[in-house]
Length: 227
Length: 208
Image 1 (cartoon, chains in turn red, green):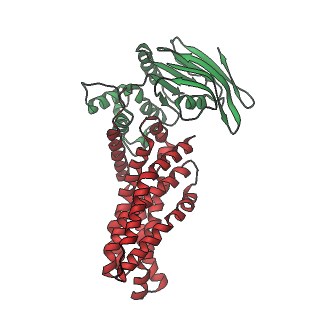
Image 2 (cartoon, rainbow over the protein chains, first blue to last red; image 1 turned 60 degrees about the vertical axis):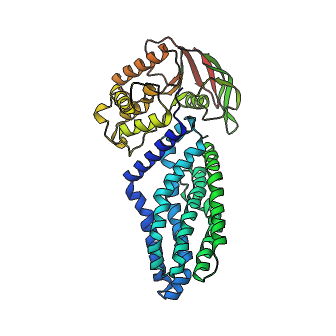
């Protein structure tokens, strides 16, 4: 029996995901455009006062990032579920948790990382003081993987439902609350000149916990959805 | 290779089929026939390990190959890319003299998709999709195959090709469980046949 080595299967899956992402690049741009539009709407809605915008900037940028990450989550496992690839993945004998991790990693690289890269631009738009920008970027770098990891559990649970998108949001948003509180308070603290390492440290701890536990929960949820 | 005794499966506390027992040795083919909805696919999914049986014993020496109704083909990838991914992900037979590219090319030619090898999955016809999903039979090395209605959508040439692949597999000591609703069946094989009859709720199992 020549089962491929785990690393071969992992890279094959990652390569396939990037190829698929490239073929469907219009779908990838949608969440990013959504992010830009949401952030642009705030000055129009709450008024263009620079001080007001600076005050709400961390929250607005983080909420927009959160919404933009959840948008493509619904499709994370859906096409694999519908065309039978998922059942072949379960049967392949490879650990399902690592298969899930490869999918999550690919999702973060095409949906989370661009948000991190766009964040300096968003900070300028929202008039975020310079002291807050590096902390905003740091919080997004360690925070967006948590969004993908926790979101994947919800995506796996709702994959067998025809219209699981709304239920997915209801499932995962409450779990994002601590992350949102910590991240926005870190950025606000940095703007006010206060120490912010505690908040960042807690986000990092959350990321490590999610990284070690979420793939297993996702794998269990996927198995449940298939039966 | 595969031994099943009193295996049954319940969905929402109702049995889908009555307990099933059979033995399958190397080189043998089991044909499961029955009307639509009598539980053939469910039985194969239980045998593959995708569904948990509710009663009975299932002894299978190694992971079988399961080819079901879903082709596991990506619409956005070409035929060659799809096959390459399956080879790297699901594993392939040891062929030390061949690198992946050659083997992939050979599989595409054998399965009769050479003309559309660079076309995207979405452009394939139903029969071509079936051929593409059956391409795994050519490079995998599982001993036990579970084929769910493998003849559906195939043209006459495809059916002859599949029979040839299956004959080679059985001669090499493999085994196969195949379902069919009756109209198309493997020609010229020695086979065990079982008939599943739809009951009101459950299906019964009868050796023909």
